[in-house]
Length: 340
Image 1 (cartoon, rainbow, N blue to C red):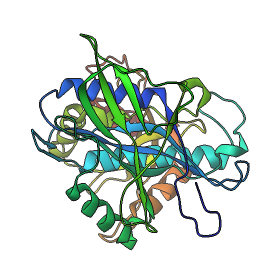
Image 2 (tube, rainbow, N blue to C red):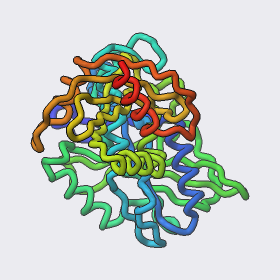
Image 3 (spheres, rainbow, N blue to C red):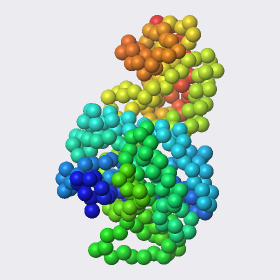
């Protein structure tokens, strides 16, 4: 029961089906080791639910290959995971500002709240269905750290190889049983903690079909194809180009674009290469702006905004293939603007 005056108790919990599917896929990929992912979603005040707020878990984001996965150990939290969360948050912020969804529909007022980090789920060995003492200390430290700007966490626990038990529909539980191959089941126990309590509380989930919940932005190429991103950057720098990567709403439609602001020392122009989230499938676009003298401590987002406002599109007529590179595009833009 949630106490509206004190704010104590557990909120309602809604989980997208895609989250359960991704939990199952990750857990079955690391059968013998612990694993886990970060969750993002919404905190909706209880304006229409008798004062009880609702947590909506919309997506779960895996760490990169640097995560430590061992039988009794799992450590996540890396730059790529943080950048993916920030990417989703920035795209959601722009969608809210424009009142526009990813599929072009009017933005429902119910979802006009920030997208936020909700906590981590992780798989534990055997039938350890509750968070460990280490999990509790980590959660309390996180909540107490004002820099994290959160006063609660979700901490689902995944365990495998349970007998497939059918729970009567009139019984409210804090766990789900998802069938595995071989007649066994994956069990997901949902736990909640906030600044008002000193331990984890069980929280009962309700699973919603994906189509009944908002869709977040697709992951961008520069975060999911890290090898290509590194190779593109290396080529640019080896050609003595200064590069800054900026997220920008270049076409007024979600998701955001990944823009490369490039310049040469002694040059008289800036070249902006605009890549879509699905680059290199979608060819890049190019804009050219007058050179802006920059200082080491300049805010690159402000420099970019200045350059963007002064820029003009350039049509290259390039025969684009997935093997083409950003350096190819910049060299063509340089050659064309010199000739003009």
